Image 1 (cartoon, rainbow, N blue to C red):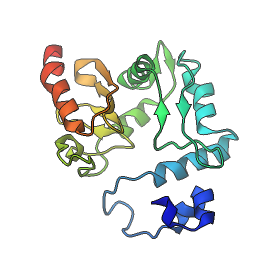
Image 2 (image 1 turned 180 degrees about the horizontal axis):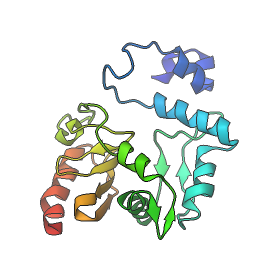
Image 3 (image 1 turned 45 degrees about the horizontal axis):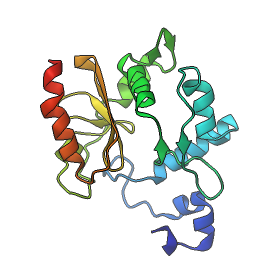
Image 4 (image 1 turned 135 degrees about the vertical axis):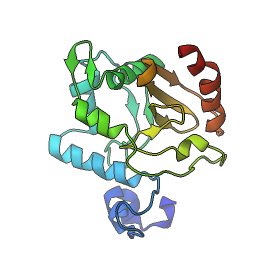
Length: 199
């Protein structure tokens, strides 16, 4: 826990991030964590001169008519990209549509199709991270912050069963807001009762 670290590391999460030893070579071992997206977010903020939340709102969400969400921050007010993003389920669907259509939404390109294809395909083998310990879908592979599904497609995955599932082969987007520690049970219901109706 963060409380185990010196006060300087607790106040400045970059100090904490760069104080952690590298246990494996890059690409050698899958280890899900929050520090890499946090550091990436701080790099984005330095490059664009605003928080990640403000930047995405100006460049993506506002043009797509997505309400500016609440997003957690560190003690210094920097966006915490790894977690604590609160969005309406309808706005989640809009973001899913953006990825479903290869980075375009209502005729406007926001992301390159190459990025969407690369980010959402398997980049590394993955392992189970669910506290319930039975999430077999978590072993289907990991892209650039996207998880692959056993029935095809990919998903954004938030704590306790917050899912944005994109199924390109079925031209479908499914959004779920749950509060359930057994995330595989939530996914199983989707695969058994919803995806079958899309075929």
